[in-house]
Length: 151
Image 1 (cartoon, rainbow, N blue to C red):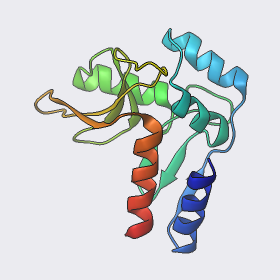
Image 2: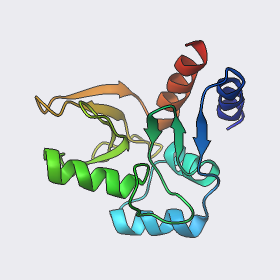
Image 3: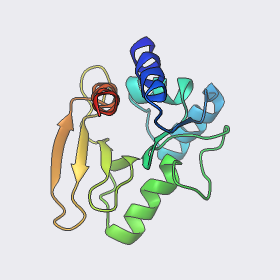
Image 4: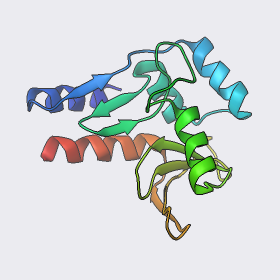
């Protein structure tokens, strides 16, 4: 988490708009897991516990906000996922962690690795193609933040 904190600080120092929901409780994360019906991967779970949800400019990383697992605005992982399922026939095994109007980034929950991590994929809303992006949420988040720092 130190690397993430450092990169968020660098993004803010560059004058970029950053919003962090803030740390979420174990109870809220466990509620999310119960609602989903599976255990979240360690890197995403850690993100939720330390940051909850994150927004840099108009890029949202969905999660839990104010101890709530559902809400009316973008940034709630359950609502973002359900919206794509209803509007775009998102496959049930995908969990949206970054909404996008053309191709949301998702955790592929059907293929955990030995550590319980899910690969991060991009789901093309037009074609239905699912393309691998990163081995896990943690690696993807670091790459995403690094790219923002370099912009």
